[in-house]
Length: 257
Image 1 (cartoon, rainbow, N blue to C red):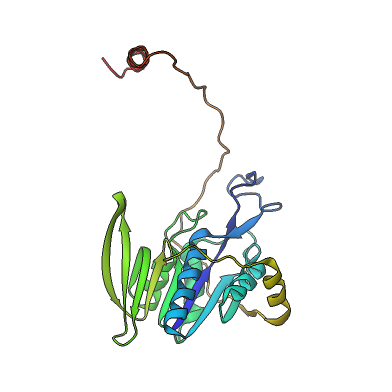
Image 2 (cartoon, rainbow, N blue to C red):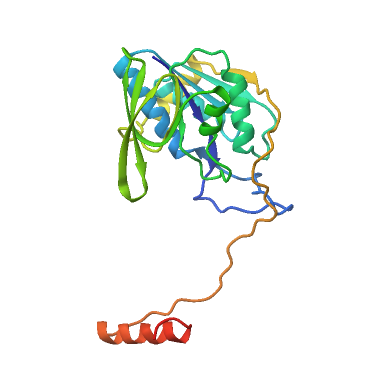
């Protein structure tokens, strides 16, 4: 079984985020990047399938953030090869255009599954996996939290999550594109020593990203940092007195009695 995993670097929300001078993008000068959480789960699911059925795992990523470190980490975890698609991504890239680039990179390639994170924290215009599937003419299922593959029949059984915690099971013919929300086990830990060793012994294939920017993405007109708009009122006392005071507050604001 040959699996392709698409991975992406996203801003680390632990850091203080600043809006750039133009007001439409984050200031990326001092921005720290980390691997998208859902993409990490997609890699873990790919490695689990490889352990069960054999085959290869190939990881693709655009040259954004700390892409090299992310790809070497994937190799250290057990991926067989890694490809970095280089281009002008200094200000990021929307999902529509990313899907077009991945299409050029994967057209004519041999694979059974393409796994990608179901979404990313910096995407506003839809999952790239769904758009890539459309470009390649392949089926797509997203928000998946488990996959079983039937290699004999060339199909996968996936568990898709719906709001309210409902789960549905689907059978999809391979090849297919799957948007992973959670792998069947937490992403494995790899020590930094193994990553450093991998950097010495393994290599990342680099190729120029092909494909023009695709229209259709959301256009950001202005970004603002959250501003303090008021304060909290703490209610103390018995349950009855708090309930009465809360009702008075709601009434004062036109809600309640």
